[in-house]
Structure formats: C-alpha cells, structure tokens
Length: 455
Image 1 (spheres, rainbow, N blue to C red):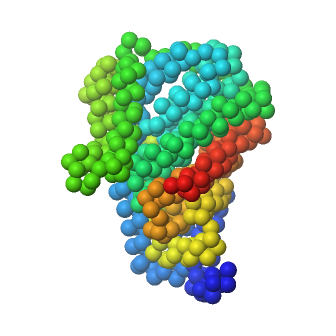
Image 2 (tube, helix red, strand yellow):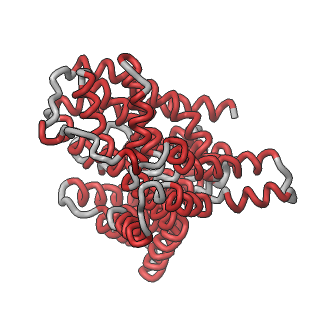
Image 3 (cartoon, rainbow, N blue to C red):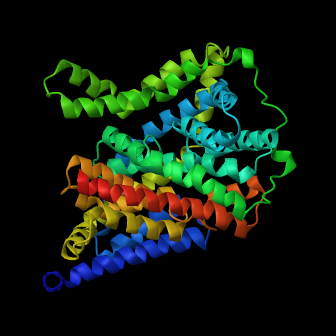
C-alpha cells in the first residue's frame, strides 16, 4: 500500500473525484430528475471532462469520437439483431419454437422448458422485446397447466436476463466487447459456458423457492391470452426456425475455434474469419431468415420490407444510449482515469475481473440500467484490458455483464414491467424478480473467477 501511496499524485486525486462526481451526476439525472440516459450520459461526460481539467475542444472531440466508434462497432449489429427478432416474431417462428418445446414437456419439466424457450427466443432479441413476447406464453401455459405463475415465469425471466447480460449480440455485451477490444466469438463461447449453469440455478431451481415465497401472484385477466393467435399452417418449421436463430451463434463460435486451432494462412480460417465476424454473421442470418422464415409465412416483399423497417424504431433509443455510453467511456480514457484505476487495482492486488464486476454493480444499483452499467464500467476498466490475454479479456466482459444485472429495483424499467405483468406488489417483486437478478449476478461471477484462475 505504501508503494501505491508513493505513486499517488494530486492529479490522480482530481481524476478520481471527477469520475465519482460524473457518475453521481448521471445517477441523479436518471433516477431523480428522470432525464433520459442519453442526455444524462452526455451531461455526465461534460462534467467529467471539465472537473478533470480537460480542454473544452479535446473534451468535445473525445466524446464525439467515442460516440462515432461505438455506433460503428455496435450500432449496426444491434439493428441486425432487432431485424432477426422481428422476423422471428412476425413469421410465427417464435410460436413454432414455443409449441414444439412445450408440446413435448409435461409436469415437472415445464419450468425447464420455459427456460429453454426463453433462451431460444431471447437469443436474437433484446430483453424488453423478448419479455413482451414471452409473458403471454408464460401466462397461457400457467393457465392451462394450473402451475403457479412464478414457477414458470422465473425460469423464463432468468433465461432472458442471462442472455441480455452475458451473450452477444445483446447490446451490453457487444458494447463491452467493443470497448475492451475483446473477441466476440470467444466472449459468446465463454458466455454460454457461464450462462448455462447460471440459468439453471437462477431459473428452475430458484423458481421453486420464488413460487413458495410469492404463492398468490395473480396476473391481470386481460393479459392472459385466450389462444395462440397464429395460423399454424403458415408458420416456418421448427428446424428452419432453430437453424436461423442459431446461425450467427454457430458462425461466431466457428471463427473463435478457427482462430485458436488453425494457422493464420489457412484458407478455411480466412473464410471463417470473414463469415464469423459478428457483422457478417448477423447479416447472413437476417438474409436467410427473410427467405426461410418469410416464405412459409407468405410474407411478400412489401411485408418483409415493412417488418425490417418496423424493427428499427424500438431500438433507436438503445443504440443512442449505448453510443452516449461510448462517448462517456472515451472521455474517461482520454482524461486518464483508466490509468489511475489500473494503478489502483495493481497496487491493491485486486483481480481485474472482480473490479469490473464491482464497478458495474455500483452503477447498476445507482442508475437501474444494465446497459448504462455495462458501457460505463467497461470504460472505467478499459486500460486493464490492454494487459490481459484474449481469454481473460472476454471474461472481463462477462464479469462486467454479470455485475450489470445485480439487484434490479425501483429505478429499473424491467422491475415495473415484471411487477405489472405478474400482478405483484412492490414487495413481492423485490422478493422474486430482484432476488433472481442478484442470484444471476453472484452465480455468474462465482463461475467467472475460477475460470479466470484455470484459464
């Protein structure tokens, strides 16, 4: 600690105070003033730069460069993911997955089936979209089976939430991977390795406990669908739907494996490096989906064009929040905050993975936004990534993602969505949804830290 103190300067103190003040400003603007995160992150970046003593022209350049690079690296990927999710929904492919999985499962297997359905449907979709799609399915299955709604709902929510926090192409993990220059395919592979046991523990296993703690959760009758509502004759097949959903995942994983196992000059590796790039993989999935999902559903060119266009509106806000987070990140980096954090963590002998998790937890609790927590924490610990190997870099993305899910409460939009859909009080939502999010976060980091030691 004496070595750390000896290297500490007044400028370092000023940078840390600037960072704390900027984060506090962002927190107050989002949680108290109810300002949109885009505006809050922009103003917070300004506060950070001015308090840190960054010249105004350099501050503006840092922020705009950060916004531009983030949109370039992540924005199009988010758009492609939204297109694929919308195709899946409007073609009836999502209904096909639900019907096929639930048609083969009865009784005690239903919670596990709900977790699987959430994972399959949630893979190309954002949390809010997946939630709105899945809740009617959960309520319908609960009504038909007579099972407690949380026994089925918690596994579905856990599957969605883990994907949202840990698995590309979701915005948070993508943004963190971009900030830390992490390999997206490697992040995806390790994310699945960590995510599977996390979903099992926080989903079907915790769901039993949640159903006992809140036995009287009663969804409003108006939200419980009377029927599936989709013409089964005109849905794509289960195999076609599943193949389309998993196509980008398989391509990105193949690229990651090729990078590890094949030489740089290998022709197969060159091909996989191209088609396994997240941008190309998601583009191919969208193009394949337009044919494979659109043709059985009798979607003509005009309808397909409309679906693709309609998918972009809901994610505009997400793209801009992530972009502003990228601007905040670049302001942090250019001001030198990351270097101070790096020296602090090295002097305190704190694991970069644990540090990334703790920073994300703090921002998540304060702002309520998993995406804001992820992009902000990634910016703060970004210099640490330069000292890490590719595997630990990917694990740092996952650690930040795990921290961003910690204890969703009253300042999180997801909290209120779950509360209203399942007809619970604030206290009941805290005991079920909020605890489930905490279980996900803690289990994930408990798996990530040993992985970091082993790998």
